[in-house]
Length: 212
Image (tube, rainbow, N blue to C red; front, top):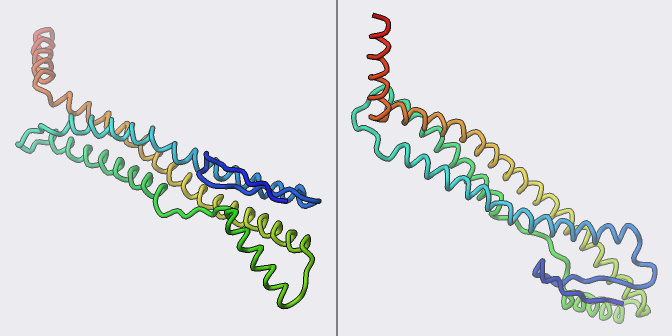
């Protein structure tokens, strides 16, 4: 027989099949694997919030360091522009990877109860016309169809989740690479600030007086 269980977490009706000796260890593994990959999908969907928050904060730091650069091109200004472009490029690459991890991925889903009923009726009609089958044999074929769908969808979802995970991993690496670059930009910004320049000039005069 079929037990229809609503899975609100996955926004999907899952069909749990119980009957006879159909719940074999292999069939149970198909169903569990399918459920695990759906759970993994939800975890991946929620794992982009922190990287995006970090990227937003780093973009703010980047803007602060570059928004009022001197219009006069000097060596220091040129270095700030080059380092800023490098940091910005890494952050853009990270965003691209995050978008790729969440775009154009079609997950496989188990058949709905209506789809299973339609499949059962089509089997019943076919065998009524071509070759008679007992009702329990038709039900067995439907059960086999369910577990086949679990196996196929579970594999498809595992491949998609692996791809999404790889994109997110690359995004995090680019964020990590951007951190020291932005720190270097902040240091250059500090060196170029008028307050630091004045302090450095005073220090140079003081050191010159000591030497003399």
